Image (cartoon, rainbow, N blue to C red; front, side, top):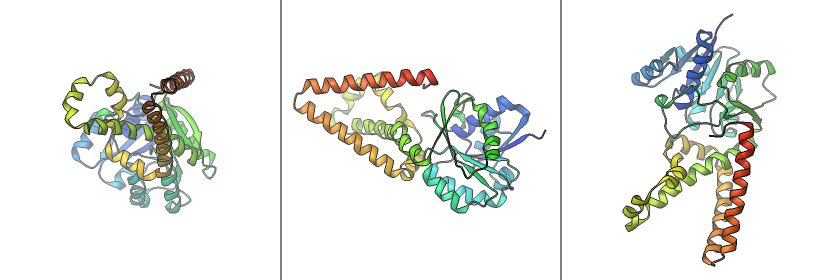
Length: 296
């Protein structure tokens, strides 16, 4: 039985973690190539075991691939596919780790020939650190992993892809494109923007900045941890999911305005009810989610 040939474009945190978990699960049953821009990144990807071969040569990386895993920042995905398209063999499956789906899906379906298949994906996992040095073989375990179930893609193609991705031990779920982008805005994108806003608020505290820094503890660190994430990745996400993000930010703005009104009016009951409702809802959501899979 021939081994699967996987090409990873972007051997960073996500791409590197995919390589590590698949090599751990499949060993010589999978051959992984990685596209890297520098000699240092090539050595790092090979030395940690994320890939069998790393190169900056597109043809060498994707030329014989059965599956190409696209894991660069979102705005780089379509230009990268345009570059690798001449080297892809008939039947190649493209999938990605992009945090927004509608933009990439629409763009790729304008350029892909019928014999190249695209199955949009989004592993809902990550760390505030980036690069293959931060990769781990367990990054996907028990985490939600969205697959967009495109009826235009043959079932056999989906099964071939899932036969590989199942080794991540993620919890796979399906959503349509629009629903994914709306939900990702609420669950992931706006929280990142809010974390960055809290850091910006601290940075704009003027003469109080030094005193504020002395008070920083676990609460501030916990609520702003994700503000340390990769800026290129998050700028691209905002540019490719603009309406759901803007809509959710406006809803958040409305909520904060209601809280401001209650605080300024000295309405303790309203503020108390706000905290009670959010605590009960959060506790209930996390309890339900933890019954299904690990949310840490």
